Length: 285
View 1: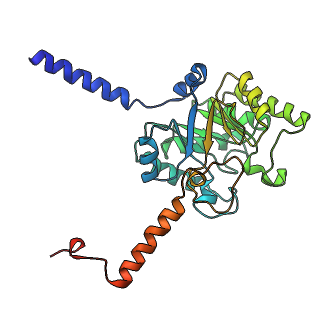
View 2: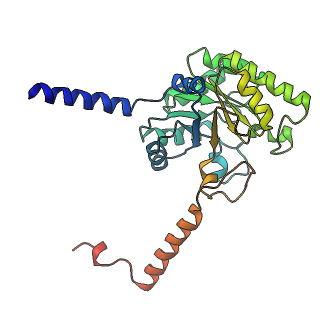
View 3: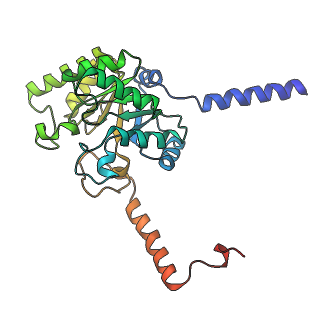
């Protein structure tokens, strides 16, 4: 009897550990080899992290998109490193199983490699992230190589890079012309050679994204890059219908959370005004 109970307890413990096994960059890279699509969403706070992780998401990205969808800026450029650290800490308090990647905001890695190492290290040590993401291709290989050389995993990001909107003249699809397409292919190969464990492909033609994906040994995560990538990422507020500023073609809205929230708030206001809330059930004696 005791032997059976011990075996049951041991099996339960092992199964529980397996169920909560932390997803690592090795798991993400293995998914490419196995042909398993990688699911990624942005996440900026504790309650949302609990929900998303409970759904079984592979990667939580604490994106600098928080500057637009949370803070209300017109673009991501004003976001600071301290703000990303704050939001990443909140996400990490949910103890997610998913791999947590934190964005390196504008000017946190472009100045010199020493600063890039230090700021990436802060996102790991202070914020608790497992990896960092930075924008740029061949022009940023020194930063990628420097950060990866101190054992901090780096996710690269090429194509439409929001921190470069002034150079690009806005949010424009990249790689339509042959010479630009070849430059993006070179960028992809360069970030892989520099040590990136994965690369985001944003706002590029789907045929080009598929070709890059087939050429690389590291996973590609698409956003506005078609179905040929190894995984997909979207901004959470976009798929929930919470962001009114932009509605890119590549976004699919899965819910109308804005209307749901508005209905709840309107019902609350009505009940407060009428005296219907609170009732005895919501009061102390």
